[in-house]
Image (cartoon, rainbow, N blue to C red; front, side, top):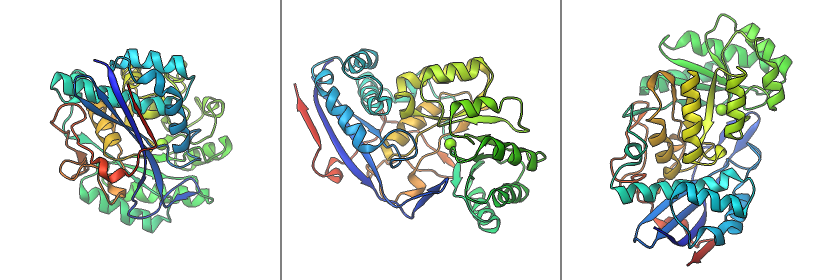
Length: 367
Ligand SMILES: [Mg+2]
């Protein structure tokens, strides 16, 4: 089955309200949407949404430029994901986050070709619905507690508290107060999104030594993260530092981390994510399967892959839908209900984006 047509759009996600992490506040977030068509008459959808320009070394304009560079190697070739991956690598080094959108679209087509929802194609869901978690922006304790209790009442069993604002003592107090307020069954990760120094991370962990949380990506560089080994009172999760499967392999092999906040597009899409999942499972460490941001396409891809992680090791799939006012698929968009995501049961990703929402394409190529 060959790819006959590539179309790419840039689309602005519509936020219900601004989104904040680690000193950054975003009011609009551009995403990049990809559609592949094949000579078998099937089409597949992919997406990559790097969350602005400073969350990681990626941005929407960069994804479009990278896809444009690879377009000639994509159109006319096989849609099978591993073969597509080789062709993309032969045209452009790196840029995993851009290649991820094509990989996701290829898997969507594969699922449709097989007549199977993606999770079945990947070997079968181990959970359905899929657990999600809710991320709470850096806030003063009272406000964070109020939101945490509301979300737990909604059904969420896992919370992520964004820390790394300018006031570390307030961050410590917020984490402690939220943990004291919610049922013990609710798991909590404190995520600094790279905003803390090593010294501040050690202080935070000492201050909260009696509070059973996990600390997620406190520091900016992999070197700083590695230096935390054996010095914390809490499990350490890596997120932004896991820039490739080889980094994951090193972090697991050397025992630098106790779990991951894993992003599908950062490692290059569904194909490399399956390897990351299997490495984490083999080592017995927890992981989430989510992404930096994105609409229904990313949400569906993450939920399908997340469903294949053994529940004991699964931190959940975070999706943006609770923060968005719109959906790409008016009938079957991906939603969180009672803190969980029900897997789409149609073949492939199981969603039908409405291309009319996206305006004029920025790339269009036919074989
Ligand atoms: Mg994170």
